[in-house]
Length: 526
Ligand code: KIV
Ligand code: ZN
Image (cartoon, rainbow, N blue to C red; front, side):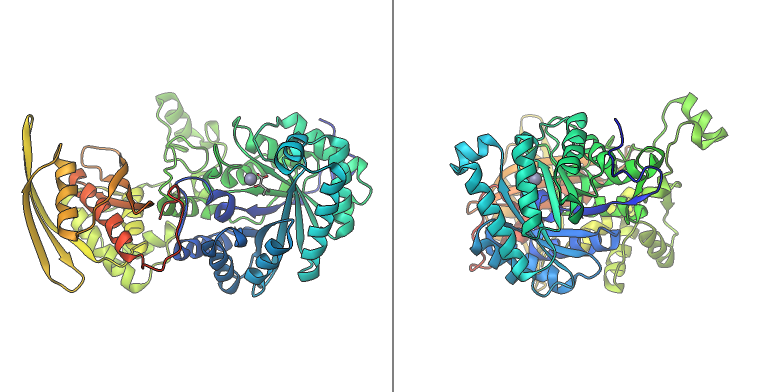
């Protein structure tokens, strides 16, 4: 690959990091967040140092509008962006949601590829250009920071793409984004498209070139990095790579790629990389999208050296087998943390190291859970602590909490469960029943009976938070109630207790939704 004529060769370029976790990430099945969760993620993204936060697609739903508006009012330090189709009502709505942002951006998009033009939009090339120009101009009427995306750009004829991009910049777009909407591109092609835009679009220097790559062929990060090599100045990405289908370019991977291989890319970002792991944990905890253990940068095994030869090498010289250090991305090297005798101050310090800024009240609750866990488990690892914290900081208003359960079960025997739940008014209610296909089912049935809420269990997953026989089990459930999916999560060294807590957590979410809450599609999860 040859550097294009505008390349700044050896000097470091500052790449704009545009995070779309709250828009492209959130719109993928199973990842939807409520308003409080979106705000929490937005604050975390600002703390992480991302330049632009795409907070949502305001016209898509009242919930999206409210989220973009709330993020605009509250979050400072990053540009806040709202998405709109090239339609007047979309753009007006986006601006309504964004108007209180410290630094707003309107992002308008319109598909340009032949298949989208002919089959989806039924528009000619001329009509596309006309609509794109009108959209950009309307957005510019509201705010000076306007991004234009020719959707499916990677499958658009290059001559036409150049024409659309030129027209959008002429109309006032300050960023032109090149999406690989269906994850079809390969790195060499992405490089060529960006290089060609830089060569052939006469006004290209008036805008930042951006890339937005989907991961259908597993090449989103590689494609984004190739675009940077060709001169792109902005990367669109999401935490943990969540997003439509196979997801989007993973922020943590692309940022660390630029940093670790600075010798190749000569570019850096404003991301505070030691906040990558805490932010990844936050998004995973809120969305319920687990991060695979061997995931680059933020997976639990990303820095674990198992092979004897590797361990020996690491002890002699870290660089033998480590291209970056765990501390750089927010992992701590000494994973073994606290024990039975650790005090509140040690717990607070460790929580801060893990990236959690707990209130006194949250700390008190986590400390209580920590002491209970230390009675059951000798060694408490970072992941144990993070699981306890996550459970406490994402609390929904608990109508019911688990007081006690007992179960008798066995092969070919119908389980008998006794369950006691405490209501928020302090009253304890109890039931005993002999029912269910197995112990988990029996506990679920007993909870349904006591709470008066029945739901269909659509997903049930258990994983161990750390290693060892005494590891905590984390259970995640999705319950369907009234056509909507609700998420629940519970952690305990006893996996049945974790199941009960997860089920109850989802039931509490159902109970916390008021009757006037906006209707959501059934593939959206609360
Ligand atoms: O993938 C895509 O094309 C998009 C656009 C709206 C930028 O998400
Ligand atoms: Zn996308």
